[in-house]
Image (cartoon, rainbow, N blue to C red; front, side):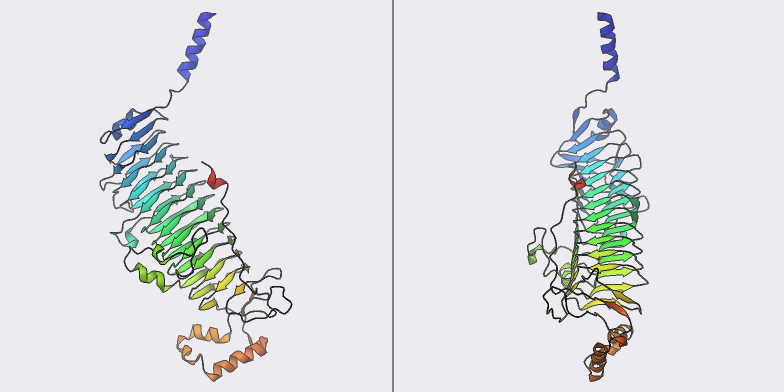
Length: 452
């Protein structure tokens, strides 16, 4: 009986994995430490300069003590992960190679690196900061990424890049001076939430990525805030665009998306912080060439909608742009309700002959230039609002005609259109404009975002 018990105990012990160990790693010993480690071990990198590139080919945790630097010395990707269930935490990663063709990255997660966790790292002088290349269900959280300011924007890589990595979450990261803040292509079921982007080309760039969420992000002083292209069934909510130069939101062949509670502040004045307080002038980033002037020059278009269909815009605020919404290229069955258009030089630019009613179930949008009355006090204007008329269409087609804007002839045409609505050539009409801008709700964090 005793022999049988000992045999069973020995079998159980032999079949059980060894307990995970925490192994200190001094500068110069990382490659050997990875080779000697067992799956599940934690390699704790001491302060100092550890030389890369390195490859993590087994489930390990690489954790840096304060001052631990992983330096690729300009050769390829600094850290390449090929094993599943790897965690990289608390490292400063710097000095990648410079080949976009070879996808040189600070941290590169290959197709087999599923369920990776990349968190609380600092990336400097990296071509691509973090590249999730087919590693499903990865988590990229609380990383600080600065791009290669010594390169032109077109030569830089993206701060965080996703390719075909369903279930990946990108949360609470900070990216500046990269090409795009987050670029995703050919993926699905992703969550990008709580990130901050400064001085990039596109803060969030979606290509062929479906059934995903973009929420609670902020873009400051980029060329475009949120570029949604060739993607379907997205939830885009609680995001902010502050003084992005060209577009706050750009939609191209984006269909069946929900845009709610987002804000575009075309100029820095009037922008608010996450707590709802007005942002002070010293919150503007000044450390990039000519950025001060760009931030104050204003956003060209709060929203540009091109060949995008069946999208819903509700409860958003578009303020201080040259054009509030530019709507073109046959976009159909989009709804606009409960939005606020405030202080845009041109509220809507729509060159078309169809009539589009931007109200839903008796509730339209707020227009700051609508001199309206509400005699019954129901909060809805007593008259419809038309943001454009035939004179606007002439001005768009023949800009030189702006010299005649204040002429008696133009004023007569506009008076006639108001008296005889049949003269209008089609376009946008809000049949139930709001008398006051709706209050924006506080961002609601996703339960998924709070998971470890």
